[in-house]
Length: 116
Image (cartoon, rainbow, N blue to C red; front, side, top):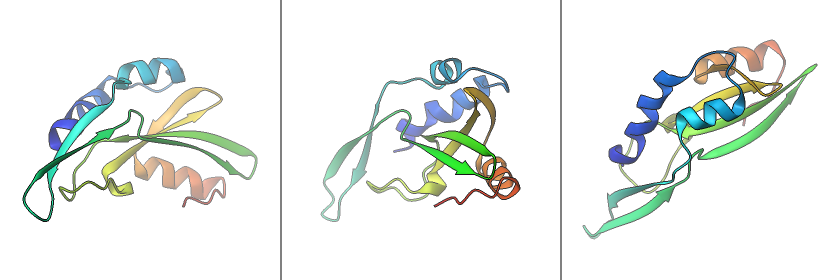
């Protein structure tokens, strides 16, 4: 699965604050990646990772963020992608205001937003 997430880790370096959502998506790429893992019987299996992997709208006190999550890490080489293997990109009014879990959590606390 490392081969599928490595390009996203590299593409994080292309991001800059204030980018439009379209610019950030272009920088991160939209092509799905194929990841491989070994099942319980030792057979190689594959699955597709979409780019971005997931998106959501977070509504809080006086603030709404759009968050795109990209698969950037591999904690366990299986066919599951967990939140700790994703990097959130946070947009406010269509502009990139930051990325990473620390950034998202700090702003969620500031604006009283519940993160699942």
